[in-house]
Length: 328
Image (cartoon, rainbow, N blue to C red; front, side, top):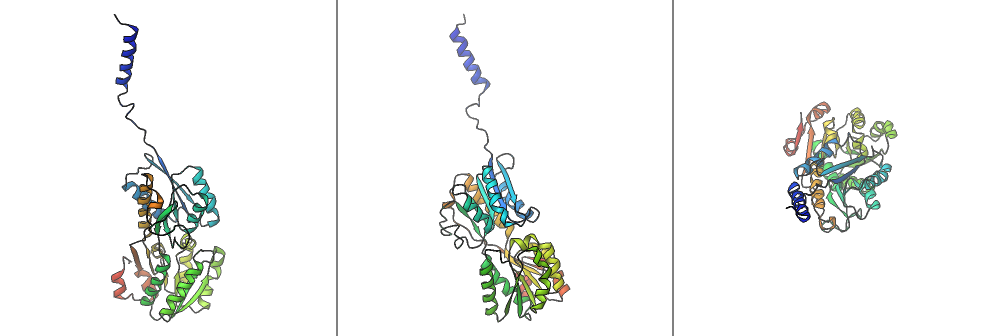
């Protein structure tokens, strides 16, 4: 005889058998990672890919346990604050920032969402962290050391073009590093008995007078400082630089792959891949305040021999031997 109690017990056992993993299964939580860049989507494709590859290497699979929200200002730094607010509204777990303006905007917008700097120069002086070893607050990441790199770039230009005494520096007055870069340019040139010439281009409308200004100052070589505006406009900029018929050095390899003579700077793709390690640790429970800010350990010298030949330059063997990449 089957009693009512027996039916209920049987039903309960049946439920347990039918759902053996009901208590053990936990739905995979998809974490949201935002990234804000001043440059255009096309301009930073390699950096975005490097970051996602770094995340993938650490076990984060897009669409399975992580979603990415990338936003771009297309060269207009004035849009960055709105883009950061857009990411916050989408409830991202971490915000990755590429450069000083996005980091400043994110710092203003939130004191709770972790912020990972992928490439920021002098984060202590900028007030983003208390110190490199102990960041404090909700910001950590890597420093790009742009100021130190600029001084070394001047030295390389002097090695490659020892006869060039008058060096023009392309500077953006709207950059937070404008004053610092110009001071470093002057100091580096003075140490080598060179003359530093200032050429200011802060908007596309000023490109029209660029070549004339470089020629007017009797420049013998040009250094284009690292700047997101110049990076975003690198195709147009390269066309103008070729018209000067002068050796031109840059802070990013992308300028050299499109025809520039040489570049020296941190491996930016490596910086973005490295940023994934910070994001991984934070998503697994680490606090930004406890993650020291790292400085890049890999800097790359890229030389375009085709451009050197067109300019009638012979790159010293000592410089070629130090190059990380030589474009034939």
